[in-house]
Image (cartoon, rainbow, N blue to C red; front, top):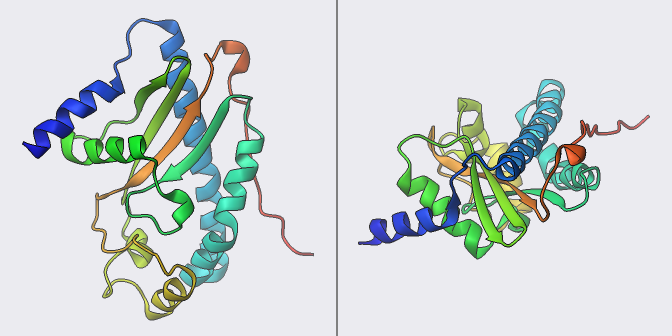
Length: 204
Protein backbone atom coordinates (compact mmCIF):
# COMPACT_ATOMS: atom_id res chain seq x y z
CA UNK A 1 0.00 0.00 0.00
CA UNK A 2 2.79 2.40 0.92
CA UNK A 3 4.67 1.78 -2.33
CA UNK A 4 1.49 2.23 -4.35
CA UNK A 5 0.84 5.61 -2.72
CA UNK A 6 4.37 6.72 -3.61
CA UNK A 7 3.90 5.55 -7.20
CA UNK A 8 0.66 7.48 -7.59
CA UNK A 9 2.27 10.53 -6.00
CA UNK A 10 5.24 10.27 -8.34
CA UNK A 11 3.02 10.16 -11.40
CA UNK A 12 1.16 13.25 -10.24
CA UNK A 13 4.38 15.22 -9.67
CA UNK A 14 6.46 14.34 -12.71
CA UNK A 15 5.99 16.23 -15.95
CA UNK A 16 6.05 14.06 -19.08
CA UNK A 17 7.69 15.96 -21.90
CA UNK A 18 5.62 16.25 -25.05
CA UNK A 19 6.21 18.13 -28.27
CA UNK A 20 5.73 21.36 -26.36
CA UNK A 21 8.79 23.44 -27.22
CA UNK A 22 8.59 25.48 -24.03
CA UNK A 23 8.75 22.38 -21.79
CA UNK A 24 11.58 20.97 -23.88
CA UNK A 25 13.51 24.21 -23.43
CA UNK A 26 12.89 24.20 -19.67
CA UNK A 27 14.04 20.58 -19.40
CA UNK A 28 17.12 21.33 -21.52
CA UNK A 29 18.02 24.32 -19.36
CA UNK A 30 17.65 22.32 -16.14
CA UNK A 31 19.83 19.54 -17.49
CA UNK A 32 22.52 21.94 -18.72
CA UNK A 33 22.68 23.86 -15.44
CA UNK A 34 22.88 20.69 -13.33
CA UNK A 35 25.62 19.19 -15.49
CA UNK A 36 27.67 22.39 -15.39
CA UNK A 37 27.44 22.52 -11.59
CA UNK A 38 28.49 18.86 -11.30
CA UNK A 39 31.40 19.43 -13.68
CA UNK A 40 32.48 22.55 -11.80
CA UNK A 41 32.39 20.99 -8.33
CA UNK A 42 33.94 17.75 -9.59
CA UNK A 43 36.86 19.54 -11.23
CA UNK A 44 37.69 21.45 -8.07
CA UNK A 45 37.32 18.35 -5.89
CA UNK A 46 39.58 16.23 -8.11
CA UNK A 47 42.18 18.98 -8.06
CA UNK A 48 42.14 19.01 -4.26
CA UNK A 49 42.27 15.21 -3.96
CA UNK A 50 45.29 15.11 -6.24
CA UNK A 51 47.15 17.72 -4.21
CA UNK A 52 46.01 16.94 -0.65
CA UNK A 53 44.47 13.46 -0.61
CA UNK A 54 41.08 12.38 0.73
CA UNK A 55 41.42 14.33 4.00
CA UNK A 56 42.23 17.51 2.11
CA UNK A 57 39.29 16.85 -0.20
CA UNK A 58 36.74 16.64 2.60
CA UNK A 59 38.20 19.75 4.23
CA UNK A 60 37.83 21.45 0.86
CA UNK A 61 34.18 20.39 0.63
CA UNK A 62 33.51 21.67 4.12
CA UNK A 63 35.03 25.07 3.40
CA UNK A 64 34.30 25.65 -0.28
CA UNK A 65 31.39 23.55 -1.61
CA UNK A 66 28.63 25.92 -0.50
CA UNK A 67 30.45 29.16 -1.47
CA UNK A 68 31.24 27.67 -4.89
CA UNK A 69 27.58 26.79 -5.41
CA UNK A 70 26.52 30.28 -4.35
CA UNK A 71 28.99 31.89 -6.73
CA UNK A 72 27.78 29.59 -9.49
CA UNK A 73 24.20 30.67 -8.77
CA UNK A 74 25.14 34.34 -8.97
CA UNK A 75 26.24 33.83 -12.58
CA UNK A 76 23.00 32.19 -13.72
CA UNK A 77 20.27 34.03 -15.64
CA UNK A 78 17.49 35.67 -13.66
CA UNK A 79 14.83 33.22 -12.50
CA UNK A 80 17.13 30.20 -12.40
CA UNK A 81 18.78 28.75 -9.29
CA UNK A 82 20.41 25.43 -8.45
CA UNK A 83 21.17 23.46 -5.29
CA UNK A 84 21.99 19.99 -4.04
CA UNK A 85 19.56 18.06 -1.85
CA UNK A 86 19.67 14.72 -0.05
CA UNK A 87 17.41 12.87 2.37
CA UNK A 88 20.61 11.76 4.11
CA UNK A 89 22.29 15.14 4.15
CA UNK A 90 25.66 16.01 5.64
CA UNK A 91 25.17 19.75 5.77
CA UNK A 92 21.69 20.86 6.93
CA UNK A 93 21.69 23.42 4.08
CA UNK A 94 21.16 20.44 1.74
CA UNK A 95 18.02 19.24 3.55
CA UNK A 96 15.24 18.87 0.95
CA UNK A 97 11.94 20.71 1.07
CA UNK A 98 8.81 18.61 1.53
CA UNK A 99 8.04 18.31 -2.18
CA UNK A 100 11.69 17.54 -2.94
CA UNK A 101 11.71 14.81 -0.29
CA UNK A 102 8.71 13.17 -2.01
CA UNK A 103 10.46 13.27 -5.37
CA UNK A 104 13.62 11.70 -3.93
CA UNK A 105 11.57 8.96 -2.31
CA UNK A 106 9.73 8.30 -5.56
CA UNK A 107 13.01 8.09 -7.52
CA UNK A 108 14.38 5.60 -5.01
CA UNK A 109 11.26 3.42 -4.87
CA UNK A 110 9.61 3.75 -8.26
CA UNK A 111 12.29 3.45 -10.94
CA UNK A 112 14.24 0.30 -11.84
CA UNK A 113 16.53 2.44 -13.99
CA UNK A 114 17.50 5.86 -12.66
CA UNK A 115 16.11 8.57 -14.97
CA UNK A 116 18.58 11.08 -16.36
CA UNK A 117 16.29 13.91 -15.32
CA UNK A 118 12.79 14.68 -14.11
CA UNK A 119 10.72 17.82 -14.52
CA UNK A 120 8.19 18.85 -11.88
CA UNK A 121 5.66 21.64 -12.35
CA UNK A 122 5.59 23.40 -8.97
CA UNK A 123 3.08 26.10 -9.94
CA UNK A 124 2.15 28.08 -13.02
CA UNK A 125 5.40 29.33 -14.51
CA UNK A 126 7.63 27.58 -11.95
CA UNK A 127 9.39 24.27 -12.50
CA UNK A 128 11.98 22.09 -10.78
CA UNK A 129 14.39 19.91 -12.72
CA UNK A 130 15.92 16.98 -10.81
CA UNK A 131 19.23 15.34 -11.75
CA UNK A 132 19.48 12.16 -9.60
CA UNK A 133 22.89 11.41 -8.08
CA UNK A 134 24.05 7.87 -7.32
CA UNK A 135 27.07 6.55 -5.45
CA UNK A 136 28.95 5.67 -8.62
CA UNK A 137 32.60 5.20 -7.60
CA UNK A 138 34.24 3.27 -4.72
CA UNK A 139 36.14 6.41 -3.66
CA UNK A 140 32.76 7.95 -2.69
CA UNK A 141 32.54 5.42 0.13
CA UNK A 142 35.68 6.86 1.71
CA UNK A 143 33.43 9.67 2.96
CA UNK A 144 29.96 8.14 2.66
CA UNK A 145 30.39 4.43 3.42
CA UNK A 146 30.21 2.54 6.70
CA UNK A 147 32.61 2.80 9.63
CA UNK A 148 34.87 0.12 8.16
CA UNK A 149 35.20 2.01 4.89
CA UNK A 150 35.69 5.55 6.20
CA UNK A 151 39.27 6.20 7.39
CA UNK A 152 39.67 7.25 11.03
CA UNK A 153 40.87 10.81 10.20
CA UNK A 154 37.74 11.33 8.08
CA UNK A 155 35.48 9.99 10.83
CA UNK A 156 37.10 12.38 13.29
CA UNK A 157 36.62 15.33 10.92
CA UNK A 158 32.97 14.46 10.29
CA UNK A 159 32.23 14.13 13.99
CA UNK A 160 33.81 17.51 14.75
CA UNK A 161 32.35 19.45 11.82
CA UNK A 162 29.05 17.74 11.00
CA UNK A 163 27.33 16.80 14.27
CA UNK A 164 24.06 16.15 12.39
CA UNK A 165 25.73 14.07 9.66
CA UNK A 166 23.39 11.56 8.00
CA UNK A 167 25.40 10.99 4.82
CA UNK A 168 26.96 7.64 5.77
CA UNK A 169 26.28 3.91 5.38
CA UNK A 170 25.76 4.20 1.64
CA UNK A 171 26.46 1.33 -0.75
CA UNK A 172 27.40 1.40 -4.41
CA UNK A 173 24.54 2.61 -6.64
CA UNK A 174 22.54 3.99 -3.71
CA UNK A 175 20.72 7.25 -4.38
CA UNK A 176 22.88 10.00 -2.87
CA UNK A 177 20.43 12.81 -3.64
CA UNK A 178 19.82 15.16 -6.56
CA UNK A 179 20.77 18.41 -8.16
CA UNK A 180 17.63 20.58 -8.21
CA UNK A 181 17.33 23.42 -10.69
CA UNK A 182 14.44 25.81 -10.06
CA UNK A 183 13.20 27.70 -13.12
CA UNK A 184 10.70 30.43 -12.31
CA UNK A 185 9.88 31.65 -15.77
CA UNK A 186 9.61 30.19 -19.27
CA UNK A 187 13.04 29.76 -20.79
CA UNK A 188 13.62 30.78 -24.39
CA UNK A 189 16.65 30.40 -26.61
CA UNK A 190 17.65 33.96 -25.72
CA UNK A 191 18.06 33.01 -22.05
CA UNK A 192 20.10 29.82 -22.44
CA UNK A 193 22.69 29.41 -19.73
CA UNK A 194 26.14 30.77 -20.41
CA UNK A 195 29.29 28.85 -19.57
CA UNK A 196 29.72 29.20 -15.84
CA UNK A 197 33.13 28.40 -14.40
CA UNK A 198 34.02 28.93 -10.76
CA UNK A 199 37.58 28.43 -9.61
CA UNK A 200 38.95 28.46 -6.09
CA UNK A 201 41.42 31.28 -5.80
CA UNK A 202 44.72 30.09 -4.43
CA UNK A 203 46.50 32.06 -1.76
CA UNK A 204 49.53 33.81 -3.13
